Amino acid sequence: MISLRPPGIRRVAVLAAHCDDIAIGAGGTLLTLCTGRPELSVHALVLAGGRTAREAEERAALADFCAPARVEVTVLDLPDGRMPAHWSAAKDAIAALRARVDPDLVFAPHRRDHHQDHRLVGEIVPQVFRDHLVLGYEIAKWDGDLTQPSVYQPLTGPVARRKAELLGKHYPSQHGKDWYTEDAFLGLARLRGIQQHAGYAEAFHVEKLALTLEAPATAEPPHPAR
Image 1: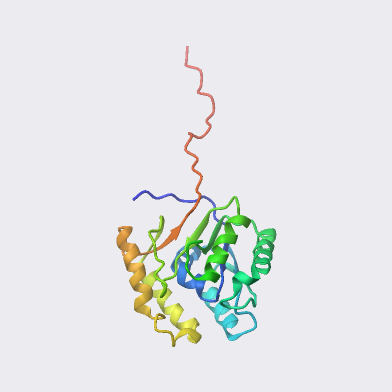
Image 2: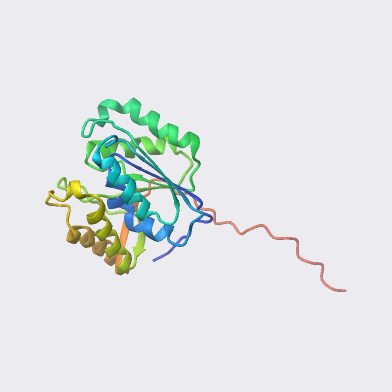
């Protein structure tokens, strides 16, 4: 499988509709990306859950998932399950993040997610981050909207298990839900790993990716000796 390594990642933006979306969709990738990179800055925007116990869960979780990188977390209080009716406020919030951060990499839901709140974020992000590499993460759910992704980030076994451990540790408000289980998180990661010839992986959707394949400019060759 062909691998491409983006150069010089210094700033990362991560966006979500709800607290725990980022950790579920890209938690293993954040663990992989941030390890050993204290100079990295991660800017997180979550549109719902502000001023509730879920905000505290999210802040503690992202501090762990992104360590030792510097993390800025903003959690707003748009209504869960009603975000399409608050399109203007959602776009203003995402545009405000873009105004203060020019990231090298963006993680967000993808626009074909069947949850209306996720889908709204997935539709707005490419409108605002127009010249950025946007990786659309996936979240397994009752709606059955998992499709074939196009980009994979391999995860080691310890990283995949650490992701599942942190999801259990930091989001006790979700423990009563039948889908919120360690085997569900590891199962999807194992499936994506099989598709990528790795033990585990997270997968993403990319709508646009520009390649630069021309040879790098070089100095003129020296004149042949006479």
